[in-house]
Each structure stands twice: as structure tokens, then as C-alpha cells.
Image: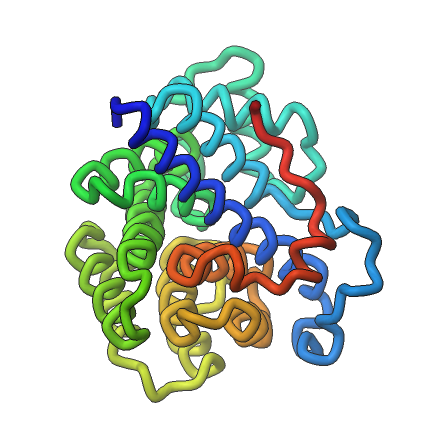
Length: 303
């Protein structure tokens, strides 16, 4: 993306989706230990503004946004530096043990190429690459063909396994398709999202489960979570299919999408970050409950 006007439009889209991601992340984290009661305790109107903290999901998404702002795309060395720098600023954001190891080593000057492929012996297929990628999908919504490679670059510096990369591509494509479907009836938008995700996600367990989940329109959230996962294994393949399905089930209703996603438990903050991203891409910033947005801590972005 070289045209300055195009880049500014892309950043506006990415910023909007980042808001939806981070609010979902913060609400999901706040209610994660009482997820089964989330509909009883989802009122954050009494919270002081800016006191609802988000997690590493948003921290890494901010680093990716900053990279897009700096260079208009993704280069592995640059985004690896951005992730590690963000981690160093505040490492107590819920980073997983392997993510901490990788980011600490990168921060000390190690090359991600020497670290990421060896994580868990074969590269990580965790859900961390998928949880942060939505701003990239919206940034490149007008140029779908570049998204798979850009999403793969954003993923492989920490998640080198093909499943981790596939999860990142799937979420990026879902977000781009959701943005491009704005103004369409929900049924048409959902069809476009699934078509785009399945067309661009490479062959993998992630894609297999996505294809199966697409046909479950009559299922409940609990049924889909039992069948395909709710992030409890913290893997791309047991997180991404459920989250994209959940977003599509409530594509125009952010609050219901988050609460329905929360109710099944699992990796609550990540599930809500991914789902909230996709819904915001379609329904816009106004879909986020004002009290949730006000309660979430401010986003710290490069000027």
C-alpha cells in the first residue's frame, strides 16, 4: 500500500477494528472467571473510565498497528521488534510462557528465525497470531490478495507452525470480508465472510474445522464449542473456527456476540478479541456498548 490516502484510510479501518478487539479482550478478561454469569455482571457503567485492563491480545495488536502505521505493511524483522518492544514495556499482560521466551530473546537481540521455528520443537500453533491480526485484515481490506502473505509474516515471527499461520490468515480474511460487506444484509455478509475465509485459508486443521463449522447455523454456541473447541487448548485450530462462527452468528450485534462467546468459557479474552474484531469490522465503532468502551483503558498508540 503506497498511496498516502490509501494508507490513511487503511489505518482508520485498522484503528476501528483495534477498538473492537481491545474492548472484547478487556471484557472477556474481566468476566473470564465468572463467564457462566456474564449476562448478570456485564454492566461496567460504575467503573471509572479507563480502568478495565486488556491483555497481551491487544498489546500485540497495537504493535502490529504501529508497524502498519510506520511502514504500510509487514516485514518480519520490523514486526518482531515491535512485538518485543511492546512486551518489554509491560510484560505482565498475560503472555504465555513460550511467547515470553521468544519475545525476551528477540528483545535481547536474537533473530526470530533462530527461535520461532524451534518453539515446541516444530513452531507454535497457538492462537496468539490469530488474536492480534484483525487490524491487518481491515488495513488491507481493499487489496485482499496481499492479506495471506502479510498475515503469514505477522504470524511466523512467533508462530511458525502452519496451523498458527493458517489461523492468522483466516481471521485476517474474515475481518477484511466483514468490512467489505458493510451495508449488506446480514445473511449476505455472513456468506461473503465464509466464502473469503475458505477461499484463502490454506489446507490445515484450521481450514477443515472452519469448513465444518460453516454448516452449523442451527447449532448453539455450546454445541459448536464442544465439537470444535473454545480455545481451552490455546491452539489456532481449537479457537479460530469457533470465533469466526460466533462472529457470523451475531454479525450486527457486538454485545450479544461477546456475551454469547463468553458463555462457553475457554480462552475468554482471546475468543472475545477475535469475535469483537470481526463484528466491529462489519458493524462499525458505534456497535460497541458505550459503557464498555469508556471503561476500557486507553489505547497507547504511536502518534
